[in-house]
Amino acid sequence: MRDEIKVLLLIISLSFGLTVVVLSLVHLQSMIFPLISLAVSDSINPCTFVIYTMFLIALSLKEGI
Image (cartoon, rainbow, N blue to C red; front, top):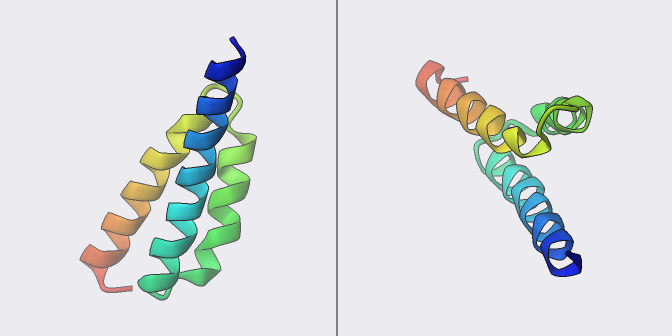
């Protein structure tokens, strides 16, 4: 059980870190805090943060924001 918690924390930490890096690379730093607050407020499944982030990045790149 303890190992699973460590792995879950690692996955969540990596997703937050990857999100910050990618949003910085595509010059969307203003979206970092709204996405992190969305992930923290998602009480059903915090891992859906990765999906939200991928959709936002794809939409931003498509629209040229």
